[in-house]
Image (cartoon, rainbow, N blue to C red; front, side):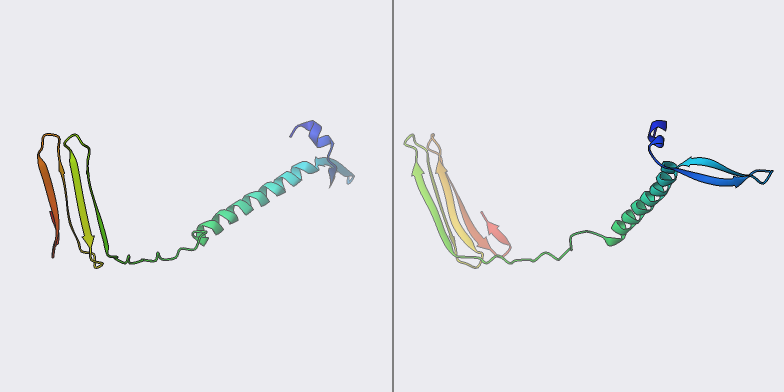
Length: 128
């Protein structure tokens, strides 16, 4: 703070005696004393706050994630279309509700080559 700011605050007088046993008063700005006390309190509060946050752990309680087992549902799905330029696509899937899916898909390209993939369940996974 500047000297001008000190003039607006009350002064604290410090009494002392000189060698002739006369009481002498010296002026101390109150702001300096208050600033020192506030700085110490601020630092102490900051240290306490940081230590409390470090010891407290996460602010949000951590709960274990719930594992939801998805239920398989039976379904049938399929489509068949052609673009009129020689290309066509087909697909059909059937699921029985136990996680087993069977089906096939295929397409015919504009050159007339037909490609088909069958999906068959096996014990180790799915065979294409």
